[in-house]
Amino acid sequence: MQKEFEDKLKAFKAYMQDIEYLSSALSALYWDARVCSPKNGLHFRGEVLGFLSSEMYKRQTSSKMESFIDYFQSLKEADEITKAMTDRARREYERSMLIPKERYRAYVVAVSDSEAAWELAKDEANYSLFRPHLAKLLAFNREFIEYWGYEDSKYDKLLDYYEPGMTVEKLDTLFTELKKAVITLLDRIKSSPKKIDNTFLRNDYPIDVQRRLCDCVLKRMGYDLDAGRVDVSVHPFTVTLGNNDVRITTHYYSKEFQSALFSCIHEGGHAIYEQNISEKLTGTMLKTGASMGIHESQSRLYENILGRSRAFWTSFYPETQEVFPQFKDVSLDDFYRGINAVQPSLIRIEADELTYSLHIIIRYELEKAIFDGGVSAEELPALWNEKYREYLGIEPQNDAEGILQDMHWSSGNFGYFPSYALGNLYGAQFFHTLKKDMPDIAQRIVKGDFSSLNDWLKSHIHQHGAVYLPEELVKKVTGEELTVKYFIDYLNNKYSDIYGF
Image (tube, rainbow, N blue to C red; front, side, top):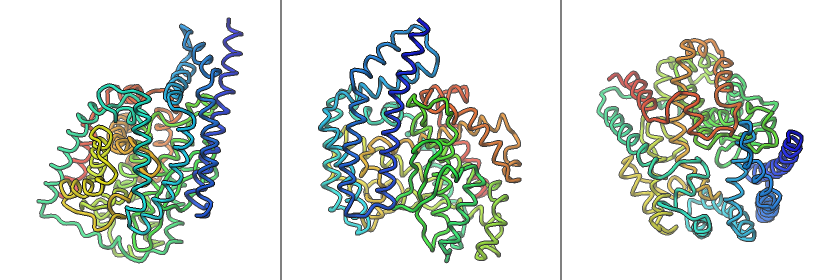
């Protein structure tokens, strides 16, 4: 019996590793398309992606995969990793097998065309160039939801893909509490007599110097550049070809100090997570994040809880002043307040830490309206602008700073956006526990010691990959279910200090 189990497990892992190889090839082609592929080659690249995706689809839905799943699910006792691997294979099998192969392949090609159309539309600030592609992707996803079946909410099926176990009902509860707390704190800041001038962050910052500073920060915070690289794309992202090849991108603006730096820290958080996943998960399809919310908890933790902290800049600011003389007369306290100033703005990735969650809640409510309310691609720009007026008191002047600002919908990633706000909640809860284990973490960061932080995150979160479902992981690490409390406490403590109330 033991010999049969070992032989089956070895064969299962070899089969799963073939799927991982295909996934890695798809990631490499995706990176190439977004970073350096010639414009005229994008449609053919989409066809190649479609072919490889269909090959992966065949393996995920084959009779051989079904037999592996049946065998390992029939075992009364299995180790933790084997059980998690089987559960993940089963979820992918059940999700994929319900979609006709030719429809799945057509969808992958449509996504590639959509991404190319979005880049052009954003460049020209013209939503009409992208609208028919978005309408096509919405139709595909509505079709897929019907194949999968649903109970209370159609949108639940998309949420569950990125955040297993998450539902509209759960998110409505979390986001209602979060929205109320953010708006209350925002109102207090608006009425505070203390105003913050951060105009010094908009100056002339040569891109080559920005690039060197970003590389320095990434290396010091723990991103292994020998197992990764930093490139430029329209929209920053992280892509994993394997945990020894995790690549990030950013976008540099010569007149903006914050944009590229904080996007690098954010994407670096994703990449460090991937680089630290245990090698023993090779060939299990678990060598990835537990969920996109858990993944965003790491990027948001590095970007904000760490990267916008006074401790972080006590360590890095002297070097920053050396390479950017524009800051020589700006005190550390003024710089710290400047990078944390609260000002409602239009662009999500440029938003301050407080109002960022409102950008996500807007997108969440629009996606609910699309899939549970039947809203069309034609109606979306007006609804987008209306919600920005209602929640942030501002309105886009063009499509590029409005509905075209994010790449997610062009990639068919409906249901992903809530992961960012969930990441804020997970990250604050994880950091609350970390501080209990390591009360002197701020002092360590001041001294430039990021290894203690990284070791704790690796031990408690990173190394486990996707062995645990998100609700299991947060309970395992913190002893509690996910709550809004720690993020709200963190925001109130931080901004009451900065704004003096």
